[in-house]
Amino acid sequence: MATVQELRRRVRAVTNTRKLTKAMELVASARLRRAQERIEAMRPYADRMLELMAGTARASASVRGLPLLRRRDVHTVAIVPVTGDRGLAGAFNAQILRRATAVSRDLEAQNVQVRWLPVGRKGTASLRFRRLELQGQWGGFSDNPSYGDAQAVAHRLAELYVNEEVDRVVLVYNAFVSALVQRVTVSDVLPISEDVLETSDDERERDRLAGDFIFEPEPDQILERLLPVYLETEIYRALLESAASEQGARMTAMRNASKSAGELIDSLTLAMNRARQAEITQEILEVVAGADALTG
Image 1 (cartoon, rainbow, N blue to C red):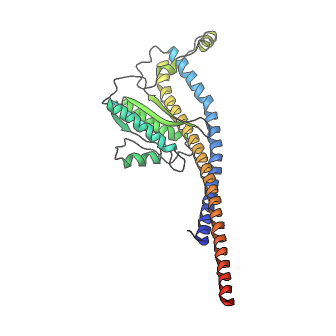
Image 2 (image 1 turned 135 degrees about the vertical axis):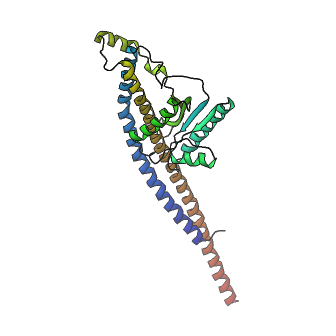
Image 3 (image 1 turned 90 degrees about the vertical axis):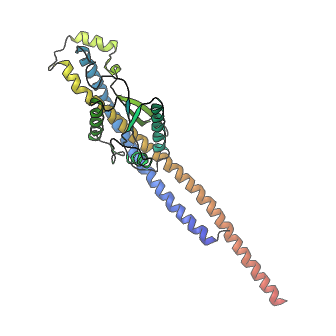
């Protein structure tokens, strides 16, 4: 049985740990609010980007010849798992790597070659530990990604696709649902689906009422410039979703850790009180036994 001193040291250590987890929970909560605000601020931009692309595509003679829209037989697929740079976020990183590995197994079963381009230091470290070859890697911005970070990722992916080094690009990331729920999402980002260029009946009616537009330069050239920007926007949105999901997962994990630490402190305190009571009882018995020996 542990002594009172040992139990007191354990209570002190767990108390210090709870202070740390509580502080991390508060920090994650503040960062989560900022990440949510950034996602909400980006949505109008993304919507306007889609409208502009759709309007330009309607005026274009043909969009099938554009490099980022061109489809071909799939022989090589690039998988881009988006993880965090740090741990202590529950299953946030593990579930991304688990899903990305499952996608890789399915592709390899179809005799498709897989190339890895992880985003986030945890994913990079895990794939390197498995001795997998990396065609690219990014990290250091999972908590606060910028549009420039998304541009760097998008430029490399577009380069691989246009040069026909890969025939498809798959993004695996955590989509933010709430602070308690993060949904693993597998999304094809290249080739860009022609569905994004389709428009609704309302948009067609607005265009008809507004009359014909004059494009300068030609619509095909404008669309060719817009498609890489759309790719950057999609990756930026995924990075923001992942950042919010990471903070939500970390906040939940630290809250659970703080709760478990509190329960452990209560259990250790009870054990310490029992041990102290046992020591007091033993001392009383020894005093009584000594007194009996003297009077005897």
